[in-house]
Image (cartoon, rainbow, N blue to C red; front, top):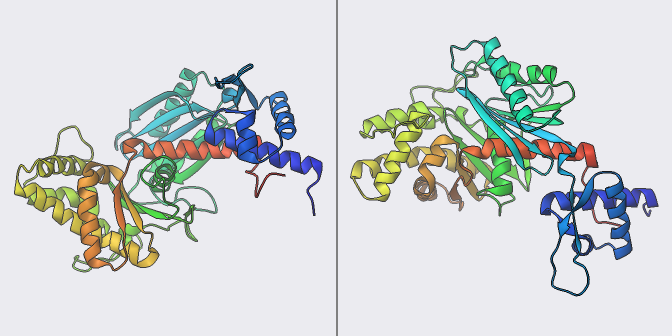
Length: 402
């Protein structure tokens, strides 16, 4: 059955808005080409969206042709302001952007283990409020929060965990209370980093891949056929609990000792570095990342066999996790993220790929994160933009324009 005129207009409007979000400012001619709509239909939707305050003329295309230059239409950037948070065990980082993702202000604050739950929450919330004010945002439309730990898919809250500070669990509710007009969404940090790598980083050309997080703890994010998969309880990718032969024991429901965490967490990597006499670079946190960075630099410059042996041993450990992922999911590509994955870069990734090939018959490319330490914030901002767009513009149009 053909869509009614009002339904067709709504679908076309949403399609045009989505293209303007993804591609940036476009001329009416470019919108016609990308949507397949007729010139009069594009002219009508441009007039309709401009009158609604959703798009505006942001410049001219500067095309070399006779007559006036074509108008460039773009999203009204200040229609909504967004915030993104990267919550860590040692602090929090915040960015505030407009609706098209332009960062207007950013800040970070350390929060130590002895700060206390109440003061830690207050410090984080105050940082968000102060950064929003600096950005000129009277109110925040959406706040995306990335944090370590399991997010319950039913409640949207962090589950209780012995290894994480209590202020992490209380932060989202505190933000919602202090910012009553904003939508606050919480997501696991590894999942957000994977979304960012898929959009702007090492996995731009991949619809299916796994991000292996190597930091204070270990984790994995699974993207299959272009969609992030969370699992029935939100725990897909808890690779730290993967039992590993040769460790002193087996992991339990509350302790990942004896699991992959025992091989690749920052504490385990720091201990391994000590065995090879690797001294960490100063001012790099966690210290294990500093050790990996120092070893990578020395190995690249062939300044000592100890650095190469350490990286080989570490790569062998990481390959246990990568080969396990390959055996279950066959993603074809694994991205090494987190502080340790980033510190090892392509040098470590190449070693992991070579050792994985010895253990698995499935071809698996191993890549280093391309986004550095900003992957979680980038992912949180992309998620906040998605929520805001859906509310302001309606869900993305399904199928083709009419």
